[in-house]
Image (cartoon, rainbow over the protein chains, first blue to last red):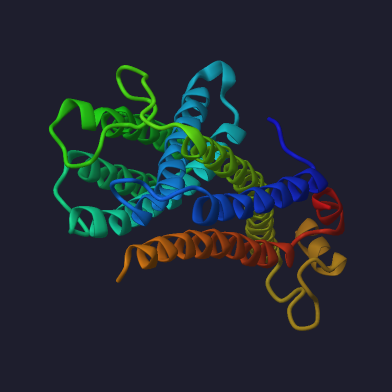
Length: 271
Length: 45
């Protein structure tokens, strides 16, 4: 599996930071306000890329999960990648809901409406929150990974439902601005370029967060394995101590002799 | 709250969430790092 070296991750982080700063300047200071929605429309430059990132993250989770379930490609790394991407996806789905709510209040006059797009997005958020909870249920690592992979594939079914909900049902939420059924972008000029730049900036952020999260997950996995090895070694050692004690001749080796002491260990051999 | 207020709130929340997530990962890394061997730390660097 691909992993970035630390300098590359730091460079990606710096690039992301610059891109997000430029995005804030463009979105808040350069692009004109919308003719209908006014300044509130400026939230589009973070709301839409956040939603895109959630789709991307859950897509990566689904593909990684499928690769884990496929016997020929089964590797623990795919499970690790799936879990890391889902975590980022949940954060950005939550952010999408909050930003949408902030946009909805001045434009619709309500923080929340029981609209198909909003409800299916909320369902997506809770589905993947459940997925993350499922990953924490103690079990054999392979069983846990397989269980999580199946859950991830089931949860991913909601992603196209979220995207097409504005076409399938009559909703208050507007249709997709760019990826609508006719693929006729309803945006142009500096607004279009800024939105495109926002998507690129958020995608860079995803790359950076994923690199950091996967590194952390690998370190944590290594520590868990080491702790498990230590626990097994301690158990084996305590088991052999008990055997030594049982094998010892009554009266011999008691008092001064320690467990593991050749004198004590030898006591059993003379029996 | 004015439209601009909602917009600023949205951008601030986005920044706070990103910073908080990176900070949370850094804190977890510091916790794990305590138990690392020198070799593992070298690999990380």
